[in-house]
Length: 306
Ligand code: HEC
Ligand code: HEC
Image 1 (cartoon, protein in one colour):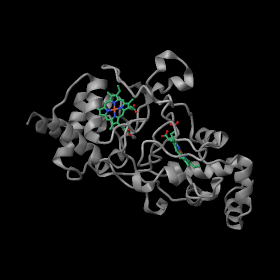
Image 2 (cartoon, helix red, strand yellow; image 1 turned 90 degrees about the vertical axis):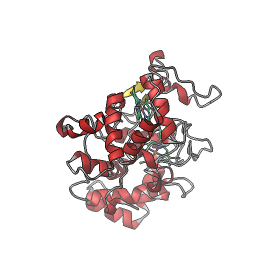
Image 3 (cartoon, rainbow, N blue to C red; image 1 turned 180 degrees about the vertical axis):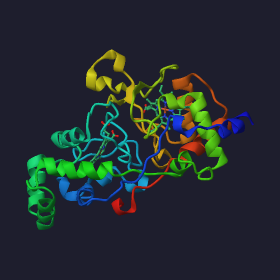
């Protein structure tokens, strides 16, 4: 009941979480980026596109813990969603990438995921009259690694997913269930919002997993994924530090955590409370928080969908 009273007092201007909206205008550059995102020609075997590991039917992520890669290995990390990205936050589980452009260049340079270098990609696209014409219309320099990157980045940044919760944040009291409203209140009260906040409800901080109660990962994992940001910096303070994930569409993107080791939201919330906040929270509160997390699901603008 105390919670019910609290809800009446919500002041939207001071919320730790803010709304996302669709792009004001869908541009030809976004549509070219869309074509490239689903283009298997960008991979050596002509079978893998960006969308093979960032599935639109799975919240922009991948349904298994790790993704199979071109080089025959599994990816070190669980594939993160490519929805609601922003230029302003670090990218990658280690927070190792400073911009979307850098992410694209790093992906191509390593060749692990798709197997082609920039020369291959440019040449393949130049042989396609449709691409040649589309690029020339948009960019005086035509098909180059920079313009390919530019179109892909523009498309991805346009993939915002306004949800029922965004309608609620903007004043529509009936947009989400009572459970979800109570869950949001608990999310703030327990302190989840100290790490998961802003427009992406996460995504803008680097934090250790196990800040209060140490967290043990599979010691036999040869990928060293659990070392987190340490893999980038080799600074001991960065062991088990990860970019705090965005919680938008989180109900659509199991399995969870950087290594995909947890399969349900109930379990994730229990672990978060225990290891990040030092609390055991009752099952009824967990269910309410999960109802809130479920209200964060939305889809990109229909024109930008596959
Ligand atoms: C073989 C699977 C695979 C393919 C193909 C793939 N990705 Fe990814 N992607 C991943 C994984 C795994 C990560 C996490 C990497 C990390 O954190 O170090 C990732 C991370 C990203 C990120 C960072 C997201 C964030 O929030 O940190 C972006 C952006 C991205 N990929 C875009 C693309 C684009 C664009 C393409 C196509 C050119 C692509 N990906 C192709 C698996 C893939
Ligand atoms: C001290 C910072 C911090 C606090 C507080 C915190 N989290 Fe997290 N959260 C993280 C980090 C870091 C991860 C990534 C852990 C990993 O991948 O190993 C994470 C992961 C998650 C995930 C999984 C997302 C995904 O896509 O894999 C969910 C869901 C989540 N947190 C919800 C919560 C909830 C609910 C609370 C409050 C009970 C909470 N978090 C409190 C830092 C925090």
